[in-house]
Length: 518
Image 1 (cartoon, helix red, strand yellow):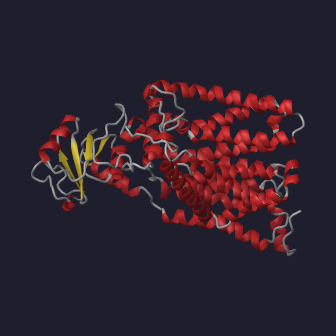
Image 2 (cartoon, helix red, strand yellow):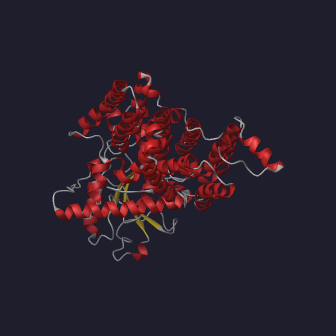
Image 3 (cartoon, helix red, strand yellow):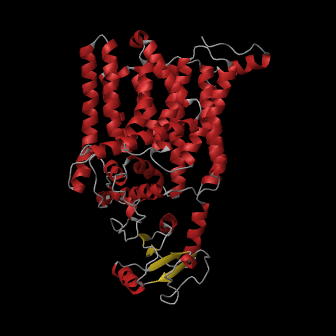
């Protein structure tokens, strides 16, 4: 048993309160209240990826299924937006509302997981309470499928740890369904589920007596996964004309290659949006002609791939330490415990299963790219492992760990207050010019330009830099049906357009001049 708090009346009262099942409702109320408090400061938060997901969701809503199908941006996040967009909610409101729901699912499933691992209820509640700022940080500071992925991941881990799928074929089908949802959330889920579920069942094969039953359960799960995932693979492969389970990995692998391509959409050239309702070309980067490279085609390429893997792995360790200084030591301790308690692991493989879950993420992602949000599931697994390891927790160390979970997300939430509001205000100023829906390109500031396109329902064709040949520039803009050319910080340009094209905003927006082309 975990040590009791020091027996003071206040601590005894607190312990009894934390040990009540109803305290989880208190946590949910606190979570929802905190979401409401932070919402006004994050109502305008937006990032470039969000433009693509929302645009794709609108295509589904308008039954434009061909253009909604996208090999780069997986469909599930856009699909979750549909019912809320259908009832007329604002697009950015929808992203926050769904994030709040995903966060609540994560908290609920973590409670179930910790109960399965027989962690005392008071410590479960303390952990969940400490994770509230983290979940809000995940949901409010970036619009991405990663919080949805985390929610589905917690369902998957709960099913694995409960081992119900080993006893019921219905649960085998369910776990295959969950695996396919991971894939439909992010194409990374395809590789992750196949690799992780295979390793998990190799672990179970050692200790599970009914091996034939295990094999049948695994086959049912994989069959379900293959059928559902296969439907989407057929759909996107048919659209792009070659077999693929997603184009994002190939695209991202190409741009980190030794040829050192410019970052997509930041090169000085026209990028045509992929369909008539796409706001920017980044809605489907699959169509960009970037040659991929083979990591094992030469010794030099192999060394380069190892260099990428090593740097990304180091980056992953740094990012995990940012989320909590205890994360890396926890996983190192997990490796040590697996080595020293091998026989015990055979009888109770939960430690090994969770450790595999934590290590597989950075190892798979390190081959291409690592971002903090990719590691959110790892941080959650690390928090679970902390309570699984220590049968005796002194209140001092417990307090330190819980504080470490709170510090970073709280500081980031404070630091990013009013995130995105400047883009909204800028877009509103452009909207006051009554340009209607328009096509435009710019000399620079790709992100600003894409947000203007989002808020003004217009189409952005990329940046062209400080273009020297002004007659050729105008000719090219007209040939692509571009109505306006946005010039950011023209005073820094050598080849100014003032006097060459009519300016329509006349210094109404200090940092931006808008020139009429057509």
